[in-house]
Image (cartoon, rainbow, N blue to C red; front, top):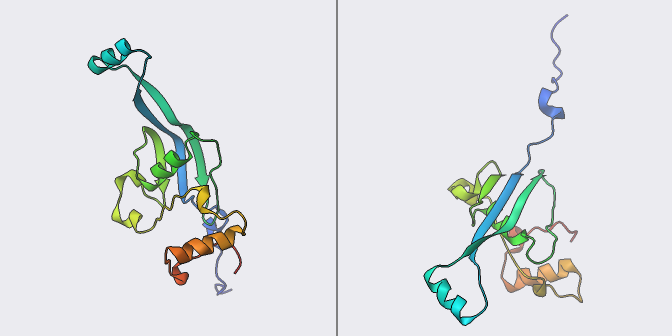
Length: 156
């Protein structure tokens, strides 16, 4: 018999897609001055400042698959903003591994920067008496974001 003209299934068709965001044991620590009460302690800190280490992000690990929508929820000081800044390359991690779209964000490669956008806002920017989609639409109009470059996950 001759060879079949039917397409052969790809062997990797059943493999899951590589994550677009891959984070392993990500950490960010800061050295902050230790403050003691009293006038004498204030003068001593001018000569010899005592420092302590504060963990802003403490060993997080996660993946984001292509097309997956995620949100960061947590109390103030939980490391949400710090994590997003490391994912976008605005901050260097103290340790751990970060890959976004196949790039290491802290390298700030042109090919990476052309593919990302980071918009950070406060919940005060949302209008609480209208639906979220309408609130985003209002902000789109205020900031003159062209409708063809604005895509939300919500139905029109």
